[in-house]
Image (cartoon, rainbow, N blue to C red; front, side, top):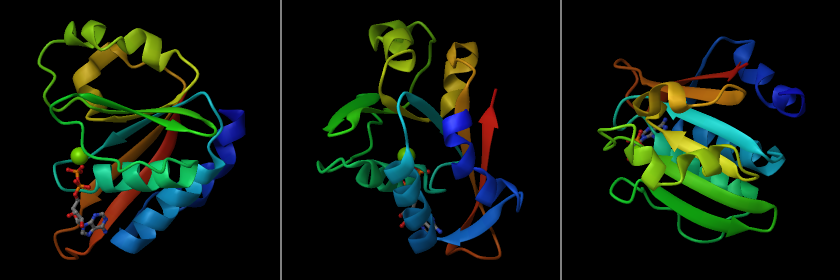
Length: 154
Ligand SMILES: Nc1ncnc2c1ncn2[C@@H]1O[C@H](COP(=O)(O)OP(=O)(O)O)[C@@H](O)[C@H]1O
Ligand SMILES: [Mg+2]
């Protein structure tokens, strides 16, 4: 973690922050800009909580200029940026951990890139330790905001 520790505390010290979409994009952009590789980030949350929105902002901040679209069917999209390669995975449709092998999962998560994983729960124990955990929740009483938690899983 060491290198990434400064990114998480501003959020972690509050426990969680309620963010508008603009605030969430801004946080993601700053996170992406300061990300140092290799880095694995898991993004948890129900459908529509803003996981892909956050990934798009992180990619933009990291220097990806291509359009970042949801890899729901492909499971993984890869982008080149000046600082390195970005892998955006959405495991929502993963129904068997063995499908991970077809994606070269082990190479991706142990490689040199920035790896952003939506629905990490689907990968079970195949998610290696040592990653940033981001989690988003709906706020029923505030439909334009999302509650975000950030942490580090050692
Ligand atoms: N505070 C917020 N943060 C993120 N997204 C928000 C927020 N408020 C509204 N939204 C909307 O919620 C939707 C989130 O979609 P998306 O990022 O695809 O979610 P997920 O990948 O979690 O299914 C977008 O249409 C976005 O405009
Ligand atoms: Mg998504």
